[in-house]
Image (cartoon, rainbow, N blue to C red; front, side, top):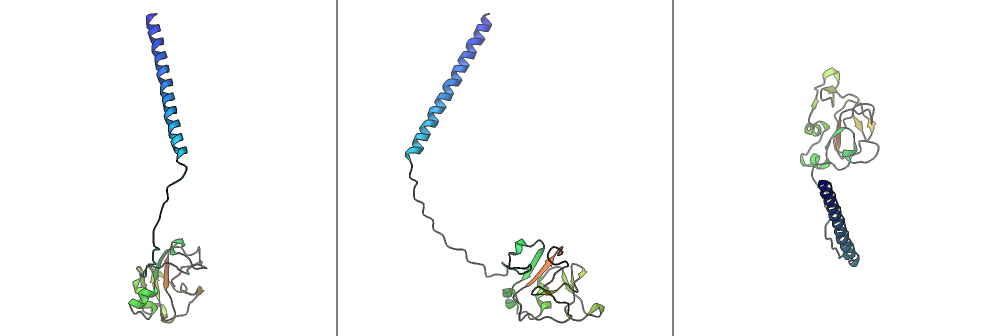
Length: 168
């Protein structure tokens, strides 16, 4: 019986301790709420910054691979762009010279009876896969760069955008 009374007294003491602890926490929280209510006006914040200038390097920031001008990161294929600044700095005059900057692209020397810009992209023949301003350019001739802003090379499945591969 004494053991039961001691256990009951211990439980009562424990309940009392829990009630006192929760009341003290509620008092502390109430004090914090009162302090926050007193400080209604926020401090003034001054921000000083300057705009980040666009890099004048060789990284392309826009491309017309799709139907509209867009960011290269929004295109579902891997895109390599030969920019106007790279063309100017390397003094490139033909498409063949410009595409020498693209990994995985090789040129044929009139194999198959075709002269002009004959390319293999990652081992696949690219005849009929050259576009100029969104229009397929299948003619076999040596293309010049005097009227091009940049050259885009897509790798991967181009069926999503064009139904075939795409080189320029």
